[in-house]
Image (tube, rainbow, N blue to C red; front, side):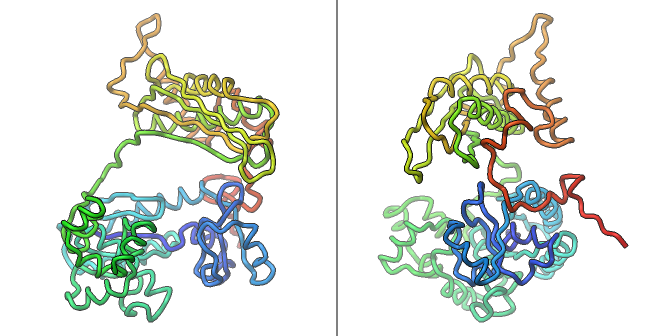
Length: 430
C-alpha cells in the first residue's frame, strides 16, 4: 500500500506562505534568467497560461489581469521541501522522496483508517508550513499517483470528480464499479509514465482513458510498445511492479549548467562561470560518495539571437578518479581553453562529470607522509559552505562576489530567502 504526497503548485505555495497578499491572485514563478513559467497558481492556469510559457508572451497579463511574476527562489523551495517531507514521513514507516514536491510513503503494516490518517497529516503540513497538498492512496505506485491526480483535480475543479475525493483520495478501498468510473473519467495522458508521444499512439488505437489502458492485454502492450508500458498497465490492474526505494540510487552523471544573464565574450568571464559550475558539480559528487573519471565542459551561443553561432565541448579524462574540487575545476578549465573561440557571444556553459564510481572503490593517492589530505580538506570545505552558505569558501578562479554580474542569472523578481538567510528573515513587530 502506497500514499503519494504532492504539494499543490509548490513553488507558488512557498511564495504565498510568506506573502499572503498573493492568495487569490494569478501568480507564476519563472525559470532561470526569468525565461518561462515553471510554476502557476490555479488562477494563472485559469488565464490559460501553459507550463513553460515564455515570459515575453504572457507579460501583458500583468497589466490586463494583475498577473504576478516572481523569479525562482530555489534556496527557499529546497528548505520548504525538507520541512514538508519531514512531516509527511509521519504517514508511514518508509518514505521515498520522488521530487522536490512529491514523496511516496509506504503504508504496509499501518493500522486504522488510512484516509483519516492522511487528512490529519495533510492538515499538519498546512498548519506547520502553509503548503497545501493532495494525497493519493493506492495498492501500487501508479494507482497512488492516479489517486493524487483525482484528489487535486476534484479540489480545483468541482464536478470533475466526486467532492469526497478532494484533497485525499483512497483507491485501495474503493468498490470496483466506482474505481472503474474514476479511471474512465481520467484521460490516459494523466497516467504516470504515459508521455505525449505514447498517448498519441494509444489514442490512435482507441485508448483514451486510464480504464481503457488498464483493460489492455499486457502481452500486446509489451509486443507493440515496451515492457515499461506493460508495467504501467499491470500497476493499473493492481499488480505492484515498481519497487519502493528508501535510499535514492547514485546518479550515473552529474551536471551543472546555466544560461547567462548577459552574453559573455571574454575567456575570463567563462572561466569564472565554468569554475563555479565545476565546483558545484564536485560538491554534488561528494554528497553521493562518488568519484569522477572524466569531466565534460561545453559552451555555446544562443540559437535565438541573430549572431554568429558556435558550440563546442570537450571531455577531459582525469589521471585517476577524483572528487577534489581543485582537480575537477582544473580539468574543466583545460577543456574550456581548448574549445574557446574569440568573437562569439556565449549564452550558456556547463560542466558534466562522467564515469562515476563509488569512492570506496577508488584507490587514493597518498602524500609524502602516507596520508591523503584531499578528503579531509573537501569535507571541511563542504561543512563550511553548508553552515555559512554556498560560496563562503571557493576557489579564487570562480570570481565569487566580484564579477558574477557579467554572467550570473537574471533574477530581477526574486523574493527574499526567508528561511535560509539571516538578513532575509521575517521580522514581526508588536
